[in-house]
Length: 58
Image 1 (cartoon, rainbow, N blue to C red):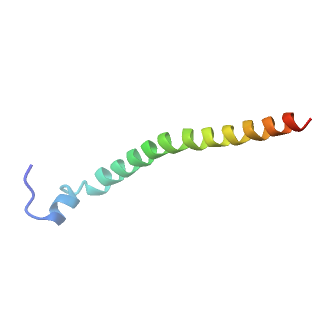
Image 2: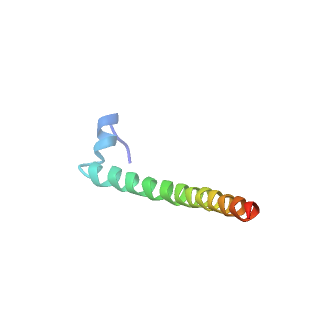
């Protein structure tokens, strides 16, 4: 499909809001799929280190 200008491309033939919001939602979900496991791993490692220190001090 050929667009005459950048604004025509962004408007996507009056479907731009739907198209770009769908891209934004997809990118947000992908970002969460990357970040949440990393944060959970960091939280687990901190908790495990805290528990190990507590067990070693006994």
